[in-house]
Length: 262
Image (cartoon, rainbow, N blue to C red; front, side, top):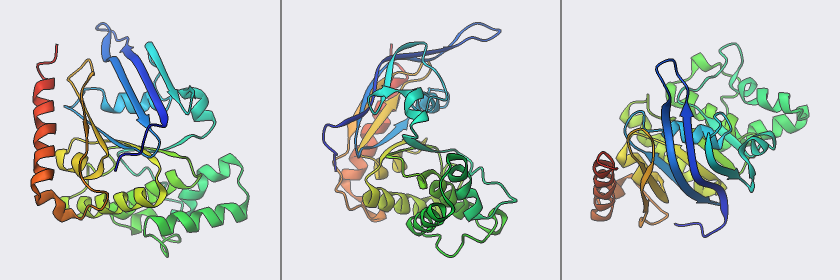
């Protein structure tokens, strides 16, 4: 299930320190990571370890205070201006006064896509996330899981090769989360986008990923990168297999070791 060596995101010695009234907060320290084209990389670690912060540095929403970070061979800020990625936040962030199609259309309108192009893209991404026929609904008329799928559709609409996802299913119940995990894996297989995914869930990270990046408590460091040995086809039942359980154990041990990382 590995994608091969075609680097898309490269971090070398990335540090990030936030100044505060109580003194500096060291969020990231010495982060080295390469994400290749088509990888599905999950970031897992304790709360406050810098998972989201690192994702935000890739998206140029935060600026490293040390080291270097490139996206598609250019600085992260240039990649943002080149629309290299779509970003899915923890909450759907849909405007209640706009329909689902209207929400998906908004970034396309800002980017200057024609009305016909917007309509074609909206129809295509709604189909991708299994929301065809719901474009005329308002967010409050959809379930939480459907709203999150609409948020993913919005991030996919301008066809960026990279999808950055910050705990998109964390607030959903387990049944809905399982369904969306299956849907996301199928979407990844169809599009082969490069995905960076933040999660607190070991089963979610193991089920979805080609690689799992384990991070230490703050200051966030990468303590382990685990290559998945699972096949590309992954029914939910794979979570009961010895191979899945062994990978989950390896992640859990990595998290435990990270707490004593020096």
